[in-house]
Image (cartoon, rainbow, N blue to C red; front, side):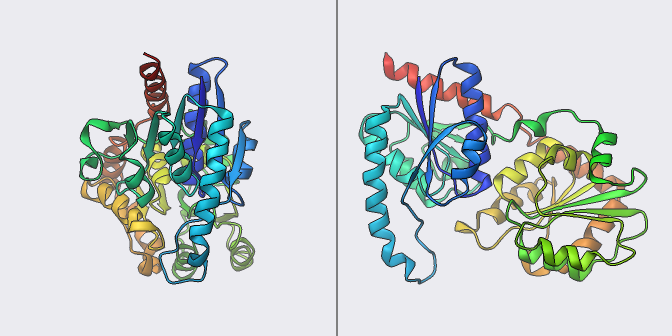
Length: 363
């Protein structure tokens, strides 16, 4: 079996793609998997690090605001389509999987035109324009949220949940996790994560509202662009209860120590927090297509599974988190309700759908 997996741009697309690949590799010995991403994007680094081959296309997204970059869009799209044709022709896949991101558009368009069955994996509660367009020719659309019939043909939809990094589902020893970060087991912990690159407004809000009670500590993933500034800001005497990291590799440990999580509402983050069963305060980024993070967070808020703070109100985050830490009833309610959204077998379910598509196409 030969599979193309296409997409990327952010960790929210890349980590699910790798999780699907791992599940396929486990289910089908000898399977050949080729990733197709966008040149210059993080998948070109993350995918090889996970042990898979990747080829890059010269593609870029259409900017939502007026910019000179949009003048180059048609040319990059044409170049991407030509490159995608060569990739599909040379690799001859049995199936193509699109996870969203710049590269998935040209690759799945070319693959479907060549008669290759295609599967889409839509991570958000509100799909991006690429998947809306590709849905017409896709055979199967795997989604993470109910009610997606508003956007896609109902007969194509399979509710699988979002694939996440395998280590998140593993059981870890909390004592080991506390030791790893140098945290105090007698204090409550607020975990702040702003996505793999960090979030300026979240970081600024935490800085403005910083003032922790003596029994509370902060584990803060800043993102590499903001790390030096925040490290200097928190490096003053008396801030031993603040642990700052540019990027946290051991997210399983981070969730294990967290009593409350402050996070962006990207699909991957929401899915991971659900599986970890952690009370969360989501701060949706306004700088994403279709404002999908707000829609992701609203699904959880409406189900009493999380709280939400607007991006321009981030200076209340620490006080909101501290207040939540002191409300045992609300902590338990949020934890119980967000666990209902957990789908730890998502990658395996999607792999099953991929295999089914290939079998059906061979009949």
